[in-house]
Image 1 (cartoon, rainbow, N blue to C red):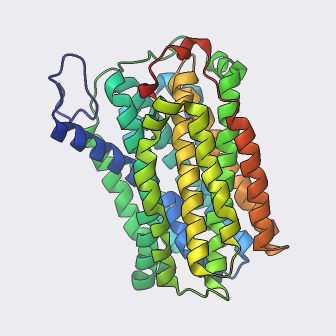
Image 2: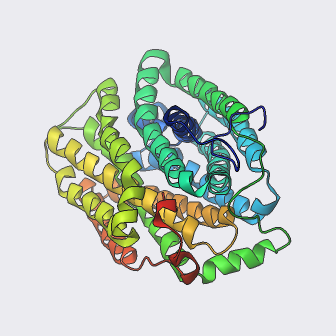
Length: 413
């Protein structure tokens, strides 16, 4: 046993107590929270940023979501070099470096610099996220891996809720610059948490690809039809999520709803229900299978879309709850599916999946931003509906390859 707290069980260790298992999951969730808290928090102050930089909603939406460019690039780079990267050290360094562009956002002089810094944030966040997924898959026992993945995705959901609430409150009290300085402190806290809680033990479940060429690993993933479907699904899931949650901020600030900036932050309690539903994704997959579970999540999101165009705050909030719950559930299901469908090096498979996922977010922010500035919010919702319909058709094709068919489904997050 190292001097560091083991986040997951190790061979030969005594059986876990309920308190130990709960603490482990809290640590995993908190790590996810501190890794991704910067990603969506800035969306809560989009209207204020657009006013400060004197740009259109589409321009500011693209700049804020430019982090997804870095996320996609970093996901591919980590996937390529995953067999050579020490998981714990890579996560720690990524989170420590993340504090630099976060702090510099406080003094970004123009939109170009702001966009570049958001890309830099994405590079760091994605590296930490991808390596943490691999760490959990490789270091957790088969009994614990489902709970570990669920805890990590739940922490991701929590970062959406509390990150937005914090950003709205901080920007309202300390100003936009003060907001970014506080989040830089959170990045350093995440690095410290990783340093003191992740063990240095060797991986347990899947050996790293070692001498194999990264290109051959890439090719194997892309020849895998199950992974190709999952990669496409990831693209569309974040396309939908960012298409809704980027531009709904402007809808909430405009007539007839006209919410104040601080009130806009409290709107993001719509992410509270997904915090409760996401952890059960693994159990539902184990009981019903991956296809019904994923399709169910996407259908829930689809049911929320008509509510988003009604001139009623309760209706819009209900629609946001359904879209958030459905997309996060589908994300948790698909993320776990990738880990089981990969025939080699889980880290590289996760990296390609996350690159597809975040590329979808970038395309959604860019394309639907132009739609929002043109035809308007109703057309954005229609575009999201098309993407969700396509996602449901893809989810119907989810099928594990033969090597994974015999793996117990409780290993899926």
